Length: 70
Image 1 (cartoon, one colour):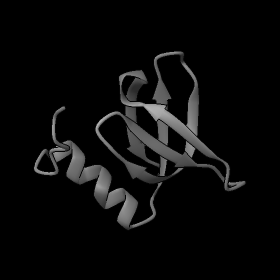
Image 2 (image 1 turned 30 degrees about the vertical axis):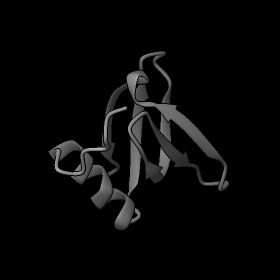
Image 3 (image 1 turned 120 degrees about the horizontal axis):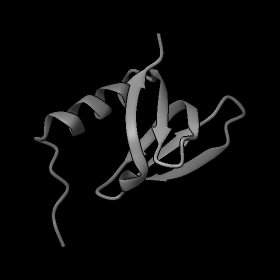
Image 4 (image 1 turned 180 degrees about the vertical axis):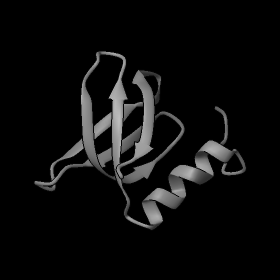
């Protein structure tokens, strides 16, 4: 089992978004577009919480892009 690498720039950037409670837009390989705040991340997944406080578990391999909402 690989250890979660917090030294990677992508991991650090997501951690900053979590810490700052930034609203993000996530596009999935299914073409779905999700918006909310990332609650946590691990090796395999992100947990996105929407405006209704509904958590959604997103597998990293399903991500096309993740960006801060402007």
